[in-house]
Length: 122
Image 1 (cartoon, rainbow, N blue to C red):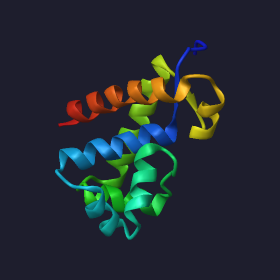
Image 2 (image 1 turned 90 degrees about the vertical axis):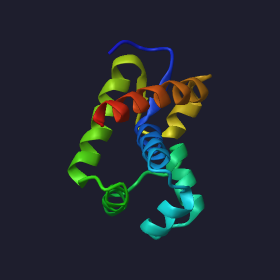
Image 3 (image 1 turned 90 degrees about the horizontal axis):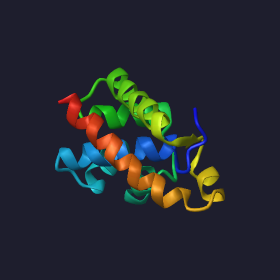
């Protein structure tokens, strides 16, 4: 992997994937939060990459979107691999913020990648 000038994190990739799926399903954060048994603030933090889903939460999110958990996880790994081709992928969002200008550029770039993967999935 080259040392790219912009980066993202796995939590941001997963969060953007969840946001795109939610929007495609015409659901709001309140709907997803109720299904997952968490607050709307938690869903917001997940979508922004500030909070990472654990396995039970991933299963609940997959069920909400009517996707097999294995398919949901596979789509998140595919999005991560696609991002790694173009961007530096950090372990978490805090690492991005240590690098100048990484957070804003990385988030904008990853939205496009995740959107393309979800559209291709249909």
